[in-house]
Length: 89
Image (cartoon, rainbow, N blue to C red):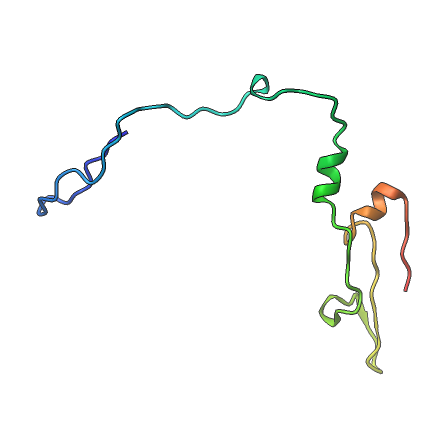
């Protein structure tokens, strides 16, 4: 696509020129080569595997004497759901 970007009072001419016009379309399933995938690679790439329980701004409960309680569950650490683990501190 070529655009003539200018205001009425300016005489700059054509700002950029495109030689070849190609339309953009969304990807369809046939664009991908489907191999033996089970989704584990994507799961582990996107999974949050670490959580710092010593951060005071993420404390779930604070007590008068300055102590705090951090609860780490499946919402804070995705790996707990996948591996059926629990964390207590």
